[in-house]
Image (cartoon, rainbow, N blue to C red; front, side, top):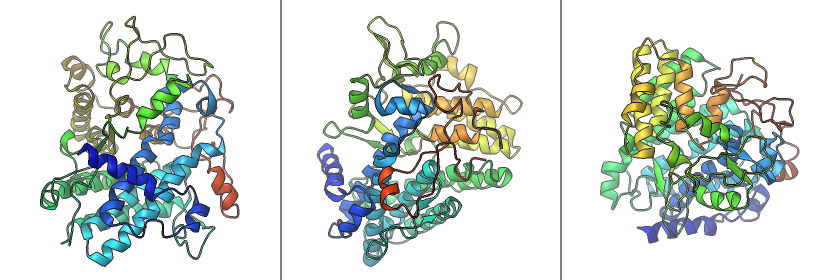
Length: 481
């Protein structure tokens, strides 16, 4: 299996070597000769690297899991975004994901391979929603009409979010249909030994994933439509989604091809460009009681040789001597890379239920989320932690408790930035923090105002200048009011 994973990930570089719209347009048929069986895992790998690569690294600095001390990471820590910080993620999503998803969809329709078609639509929805959360308006309708349009217009973020839900519904319908062929060992998320086992065991989990994504992106509209988004979120969960950690979608990398976090840790920590935020370490130290840390701390962060947790202060221009490095949870070549964890889904359910006035359901979902997070990271649900932080009732559950625990659970995931933006009071200035309460980086260049979005990548600005909106990192995506 490791050899197959290596082959599939190697194909990413072979199939998707172009870097922007202008390079795609010089070779619009780049992957048309490849089979859907080959393109499908390449798209999955590109998506995982897109959501857990550079964008997650930068948002983790904003959310103070990490602190940047040199290079681009320091610029992010100073809230001084530069145009090329978006290039890698943008290129992966357009050249590596959307362009090849289009090929999968066309080939699947010709072959009657509706299971591939359904999975491709789910991946497309995930790429589009994540892109909106970073950039707001993006090219979509005209983006892949490569033979005719080289400078695509930008679609409104609201319309794309509506399309996301439509794609997820279509994907579920396709997966519930007969198909001439199905994925199997080439499914990097829900691998099966053969197509029959995939249809029996993996196909239902892809449907669960689609409903989980529907719930996540309905819940993102908590400021736009508090009641309606809560109802839609709970309906998506009730339609059938993850029931335990065993159902969650995770890509497990092999020793030959490392996950996205491992090379980042090796280079940036090795070059002292970034450090583990002292604020995050302080949050987890003595969390249960004095002398009893959050049980996830040693998995997130490695102790020093002296048995200490020495973080890097936010705003610092250097890492303290003996500062800690990431722990074994993500800092190995084989570290699993999450797409959407069961614990996140239960936190989403807790938040939506609370907003809907269903406090008992909110408390039950929250308690399940805390236990699932501990189990996933450490292998067990620590009883002392559960007693203090995972035993809420209808009378005690609050939004602050939900978002605080979810923030810890989402360690190094960009979704934490979406949650933080959503939890700021509607209409508040950019100097006001969401949940958890963060202090602006001491070295910020924005008079204490937190960044609310990514700026567009430099190559897109240069090659599509007539259509790229003029924005700063202080502007907001449509759901962040």
